[in-house]
Amino acid sequence: MKLIISSKAYSPWPLRAWLLMRMLDIPFDEDVVDVGAADKKARLAAASPTGRVPVLVDGAIRVWESTAIIEYLAERFPDRAIWPRDAAARAHARSAAHEMHSGFAALRKRFPFNTRRPPRAVALDASVQAEIARVFALWTEALQRFAGAGPYLYGPFCAADAMYAPMALRFRSYAVEAPGPAGAYMKRVLALPALIEWTDAAMADPARNPAVDSAE
Ligand SMILES: N[C@@H](CCC(=O)N[C@@H](CS)C(=O)NCC(=O)O)C(=O)O
Image (cartoon, rainbow, N blue to C red):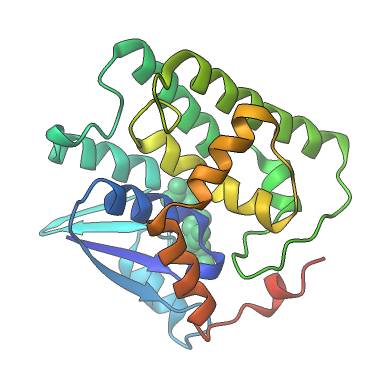
């Protein structure tokens, strides 16, 4: 299988699929469309009907949209527990993942994704603060109700953890402190060797997006 992604420093959606596959030992090749490449638009258009990545290519099958990739992987690798085995935990995890996919617009806008950004706080309006509080409440609820012995939201690492991993990176980049169990969970996610592999690769990548790099 091949996962088409974009420059790692700026790519929260590709990170989700990539991290899930790494964490669940699903082998794949990666194909990176460089943010600075002259043919970037053409390559994205050739890769994806939306011109956006991630795209998973499995033989003749092409899957776009991160949530569709997760569902495809869950069907293709039923032994991997991409979603929790328990029905109540699975329902919660799916709701959390879809809430991430469709929500948190204020937070994403205020915290442009940039894994190379030295941690620094910015002023937060009420809508961003409310979305941050919602993420922490969601993590705390999942940890308290479903994590058991942990260490992740529903115990073993699953798709919901992958969906929220870029949020942990955003919180680090913008110096947002997570309280209590949510903070401990965030630390565990940021310590994942696979996540560090991604951010190290981003650090070493010469590709630059000046608009994001110059954000407040
Ligand atoms: N809803 C899509 C969003 C994908 C998306 O916005 N991807 C960004 C990278 S994070 C992209 O490909 N942007 C196009 C570009 O960089 O020109 C998904 O869940 O996969």
